[in-house]
Length: 307
Ligand SMILES: Cc1cc2nc3c(=O)[nH]c(=O)nc-3n(C[C@H](O)[C@H](O)[C@H](O)COP(=O)(O)OP(=O)(O)OC[C@H]3O[C@@H](n4cnc5c(N)ncnc54)[C@H](O)[C@@H]3O)c2cc1C
Image 1 (cartoon, rainbow, N blue to C red):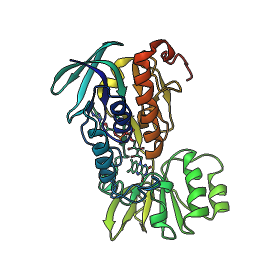
Image 2 (cartoon, rainbow, N blue to C red; image 1 turned 30 degrees about the vertical axis):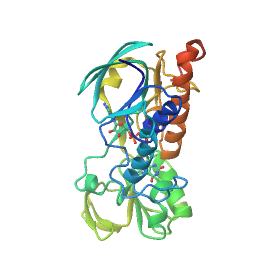
Image 3 (cartoon, helix red, strand yellow; image 1 turned 180 degrees about the horizontal axis):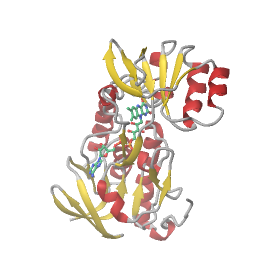
Image 4 (cartoon, rainbow, N blue to C red; image 1 turned 120 degrees about the vertical axis):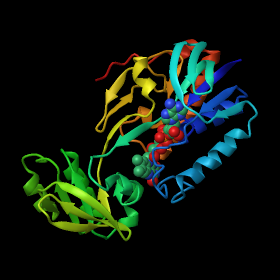
């Protein structure tokens, strides 16, 4: 049987797309390997109606909603390849080959952290990427930033202004010509020594710098580098844009990628992802993929070649 739509990735974006398609009684299978980007976090914040709830609890509820529609099915394994064209896509999956008329890529990105001892264990707990997602929980406590490039002072200004009076910026590179003056003006402690080790302590971490000094932090803010979570995405030749942490897929307003019939939603299409836009993307991609079955000419591939 050829599916109407195959969805690669069954997290916030993919499950929401499935919900829309199920409500149109279209056949859809959601392929998923079960590792949402925020899997390491005990709680997701800033998600209306779900603020502070465990990510897997939110996902289980959305999946239950989608599963109520009889044309929606789930395959909890990986998609490893995609070929063919609109109306006749072929997906290689761990469970065999599947054909589909449309595909929605909602398989997200993965974060590659700096190679510093102890950092990976703290990711999502005290090693944090976003003050909106996790800053309130460490408000007023000693905070640190693993600083690289111009975003380091941007983060320093945010944290020092609205989250804590005790902010240390650990400079992993020279941070630009005016960094000393800017850090002083912000009343942020600038440490020009590399972080070499982080050890969990209480609900924070003890950080050791290359100069032998150490400091405690309740939250160490940093940005890793991102890459597409599914390796086969790189083989599709889709147009990408460079983001601050890594590339993301360029799509039209209807979430069509640069290939007809292939839609994309969620973090895979965004320079900086959070849950709520991923949910919204799922609605747009799901409804657009559905309507493209009725009016294919209204959903042309994205031809924009913005760098
Ligand atoms: C540590 C951390 C904490 C965060 N906390 C928050 C927060 O508090 N609030 C907030 O709004 N946002 C938060 N975010 C951002 C949030 O996690 C993402 O915006 C959101 O998960 C994106 O949803 P998505 O559906 O696009 O992708 P993801 O949630 O990353 O899901 C992608 C899915 O695709 C699956 N997949 C990957 N490859 C394949 C394949 N080949 N075949 C089949 N399936 C595949 C994965 O297993 C995964 O289930 C956080 C991010 C991080 C890194």
